[in-house]
Amino acid sequence: MAIYAIKKGDESGDRLQQRFKKQVQKTGLMKLLRERSHYKKPRTRRLQRIRALKREQFRTENRKKQFYSNM
Image (cartoon, rainbow, N blue to C red; front, top):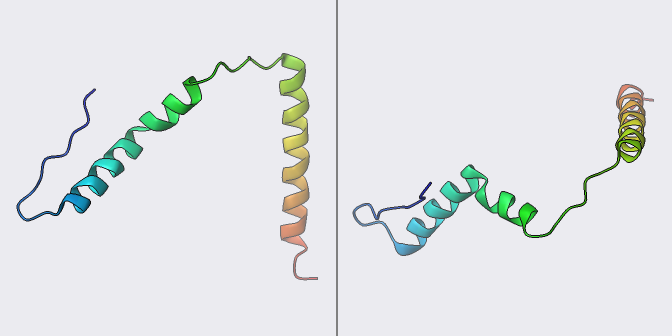
């Protein structure tokens, strides 16, 4: 998939560059390349479970703080 930007009329070089940059960000290409640049060891099921439980705990605490914030 090629990403390109063609200059429109009196458009400046900076504006053209910003438009191109925006197109690249929308595709998510840079994010994908950064993730793939280094090998990432797959998480074990145990570690996934522990992190999920911790995440759920944080969420419940934040909900409580949000609910009781007026006190």
